[in-house]
Each structure stands twice: as structure tokens, then as C-alpha cells.
Length: 218
Image 1 (cartoon, rainbow, N blue to C red):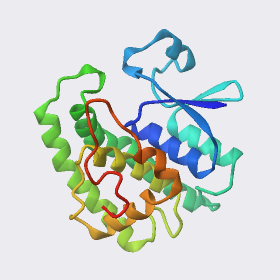
Image 2 (tube, rainbow, N blue to C red):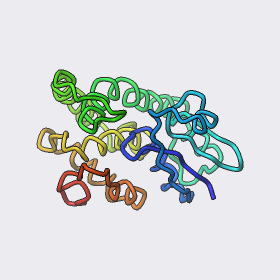
Image 3 (tube, rainbow, N blue to C red):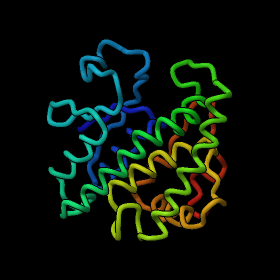
């Protein structure tokens, strides 16, 4: 059995979980408290980060690298365009969410509210994240006003990267679904996919999800 070492509300882990589920690859989920830097886990990934995918006796790390490896080895259904320009745009948007969005929003809202790693919530970070998410939602709406999906006319890994972050934020009720109808419609399509079922069943001890979190109709 393949095994994914993960943390439930990590958007990087969620992106890999969505990719695995979309491609119908079964894995055993093993929750990892990565901030504790367990020596056994560090042997799997010296960087000390999740996700880590064990497959065929190998340990694969870094979410984007894992997802593209899965795309290369299990090409159906495709999550990357065939043309160079299309693949570039998917990678650009994945990087936007996994870098800029993560630093400005996810880390300052999800990680602070859940006290990941035993941190004490910083009100300044929460305020900053609450302000910056508006800018990012506006950018997403601008993209979706021009395209059916974030990177083009077909659903791609870019949509999974964005949905991984948005779903983690939605768990702690930090997404204003009234700001842009086009984003709410996009997310409704994503969360209705079978690949999203395990994401919507996540439960963090001591932190129940928002009431609408698993509601496909909000």
C-alpha cells in the first residue's frame, strides 16, 4: 500500500491528496506532526516537511514535484495541458498559491488559528491575512471571468493547488463567499468532485470545521 505522510490542513498535502484521488491511486494516510522534527520522519525527508509519499519503496517529497511525478506516471485523467504555454500557466498559478498566497494568507490565518506547532496566535498576522485574502480573491475572480478554470478551459493542477488553500481556509471560516459569485461557483464544482470527499471529512481535534464546510451547496 502506498502511504502519504501528511497534516490534514496543510494545503500542500491537500494538493497531493486531490491529485492522488483524482487519478484513483489509493494511499494510506499517516498524520505527521512535522513540526516535532521526529528523527524517523527526518530520515524520510531531511527537509522536515510534509507531504511525503512512499511509493514502491521510495520516498517522494515536495508537493509540486510529487504531483508532476504522478502526472508523468499516471497521465489519465490529465491535470496538465500538453502544450508548453498551457503547462507554464498551470505552474505559474500553482507557484502563486504555494508561495505568495501561502505566505500572505494561509500561514497567517490557518496556522495561527489552529496554533500549528504550538504557536501562540498573533493578532497582527490574523489581521494581515484577513486583509490580503481580499486581494487574492479579486485576482482569482479576474482569472475566472476570462476562463472556465483558473489556468484555462480545462480543470488542472492549478485548480487543485488553489482549492487546497481555499479549503483549508474554509475549514476555519476565513473565506468571504459573498465577495465573488464566480469563485463560489468554481469552488462548488471542485468540492463536488469525488476526489474531494476525504478532504471534506477531515476533522481536527479541538477545532470543528465551519458549518458549511462539507455542504456541497454551501
